[in-house]
Length: 351
Picture 1: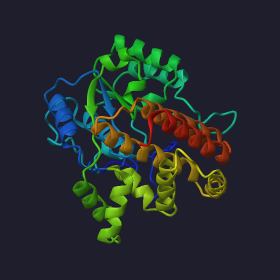
Picture 2 (picture 1 turned 180 degrees about the vertical axis):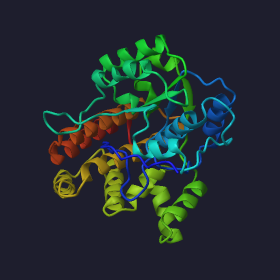
Picture 3 (picture 1 turned 45 degrees about the horizontal axis):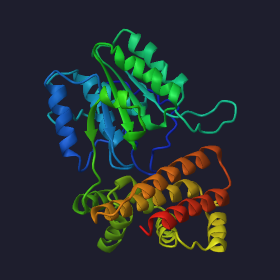
């Protein structure tokens, strides 16, 4: 029996409290098309040098990336493993990946600034430069090296250029998996050198089934409410189910509804409340961005212009990411969000 590797310190900003981290997860719900495409390429012996795994937060992008990594590290680009790219949890590759200690796997994420102790706002060039040394090492027993960049749209300009240089001269028997919430932020030259695996929001039936498995204590009407508020994101639904989640989601919905005439005193009071809740500002920002995305899609389907609202969503994402990373005043961030939404509503009408 393989010896269990000692866990390493990993910054887990993408873990939903109480549930498996993507590197530990064995279930991948509702993404059969993307999984089948990846499986055909890998088991056929001709995987690309890089995949760009894209889609909204909380739908399984990182879970798919780690699933691909485990298979390659266990079986290589062969058809020796299962057709769905699963790897038994008790195999050495699966144990090491779950522990974050596999020598053939490198995961690059926004790190903690050693000077401030706070999470960095960007994925820096120093992190991306680790790829050259990693891919230059002698491969392990499985013959493959896999790097996961999560999320690639956090890269600054210098980091993106460093990654592009590596893609122009790809090493052999190496796989680069770029996870991106907003792939449009990446350089066109990076996107053109990757094959796409576009993941979709989960449909209501799939989401309900997953919630029934993961949260068996919930009633049917509670699952339905979570499905509606999460907009097809399992990660969002699990976050909503915990503590203050549903209240924060309702406030996000209210802020968008009142975009043209925000209630400033109420927003200040709300900002003070979420400032006292662990991860309150970060969760509220995620709900706000997700709710706005749903409304943008609905508006676009009716033929209306959505350019200004898309710009507003991008501004909100940047604002909340910066505020969370730098631990800025929640009042400043929430009032700034209200100004962004108000400006979009004045120019483009309600969404």
